[in-house]
Length: 385
Image (tube, rainbow, N blue to C red):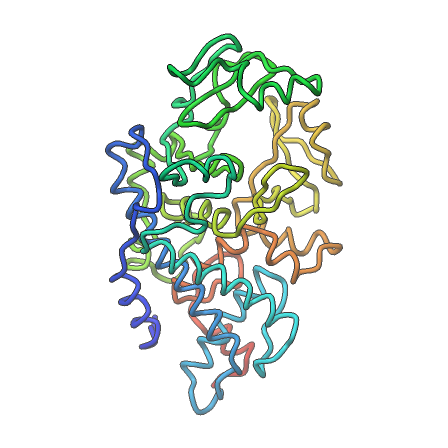
């Protein structure tokens, strides 16, 4: 497999940049996992920079096929990846108003990620929550395991001087609208009020590895990632050093850095205020089958819906969305729901972006079936000698 000088230069420069944990308040529950976090954030810089520079390249006119074959192949490889994941082809002449605007917006997100992670200040510096960010020395929090959040009944006080659960402003607000909590989970100035007493917060369930909250400025690393097996999975740098043709992308995709990068995309993508509640602009997507049906899960297994159920329907039936974790599902999301314009969907979906940065860092043709191939097909398709 041939690697262009520009790709090698990119890899070398990315490896020289280390992430900083200074922008985050790392909870004592993560003692012993700090190096894993720092490495995951550092490799996230690699991924973000690979994606940013790839978009930079494909925003330009396609290089001359006869005069600069290597550059033409590189452009075609990136363009094919964009088309495969996002559902549109970059403009061969470097124009294309709609595609250019979408790619530039994606480039901005990747660039923001690559620039903030090595710095000493987060973005936003103190987090999104107007309440938490107003506290002295506020920083977004990283915890390991959702069990750091302890249950307290309404008449209990989580810490001396804090006041009882029922004395809190948000408790009284919920009570005033007929949604009186019976208690709350509490940790580090973060309250999760519940109308039914629960033994667990229910965040780290099933195969979930991490989740980041828009309202509480907290990144929760789940036990699945903290196990020896979870920590031993090959990272993007490991894969880049050993990958060969015919590699199955989904067998090398999931690792601690890839999961952390996924959560960071939510974080750096920003938030919207929706009816008084902060929500990530970049949301997790529901898995879509080849039949175009939306996939959800309950305690008995998988359920399919033609149209997205409301939040009330999901709660009533005990359903949660099934994560869109496979490359085939990414393509299904674009192709099966034609009412979603690809250029809009490219920005809205976290999965496509998460796949894109990984595919950019590995110098292969990934545009078909998620298998690593040489550039024979791309050269034929783009008429490159």
